Amino acid sequence: MGTTASLQGECATRLRSDTIHPMSDLSHLLTNNRVWAEGIHRTHPVFFGSLTAQQRPKFLWIGCSDSRVPANEIIGLMPGEVFVHRNVANLVVHSDLNCLSVIDYAVNELKIKDIIVCGHYGCGGVNSALAPSAGRFFDHWIRHVRDIAKFYRSDIESEPTAAGQARKLCELNVAVQVVHVRESPILQHPAARGVTVHGWIYDIADGLLHDLCPMIEKVRALEPPCARA
Ligand SMILES: [Zn+2]
View 1: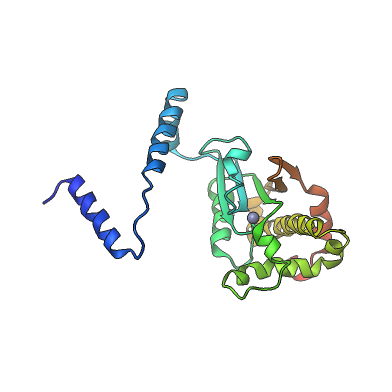
View 2 (view 1 turned 180 degrees about the vertical axis):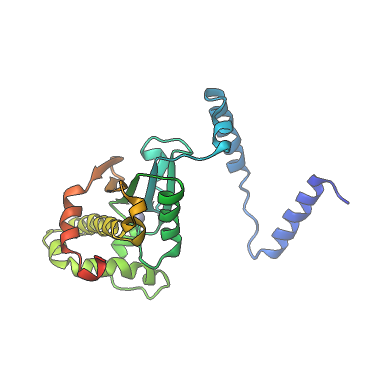
């Protein structure tokens, strides 16, 4: 029987041989992790110990997968303080068991009272909904945003520039997803009483978040009856 080190070596060799492309060297990320963990431990010696007991996040963040919009960092929170779900274009689709399970767990298990749906300007997923379909698998997902663009076409076209129209669709997309969360059976259940759903948009250009409250109320009034169970 080999040692742990030799088993790890055999495992790495096997993985390499089964992979079409040569294995990337990610050792710098593991080094970064050690530096990060040591830094946290120096400033907060009991931090990791307290996290192992249980998680008590106060917020659920539903955001875009975009690498420029990391949930914890932009709202200044540490690990353990925000429960996160991310997908392309920060969508809340009625049949997406992944997202709905996260919302259910957040509300009914973690007892979270504030849900934040956060989009961002310059969203590649949202922008692609304003372009012709490329016929890729991805287009099935973006079809949800295309439907929003179609429904709110006059609002979007009231913006004189293509950039302005893209920004408006980013905002409208957030507002519609907020309505989807609010009107989901999970939030409609009496157990979810007291939960607030917020809609924000993040500007990558200056790092600032903006509350979309007025637009959300307008969208809520306009959403088709089928979305207002
Ligand atoms: Zn995005």
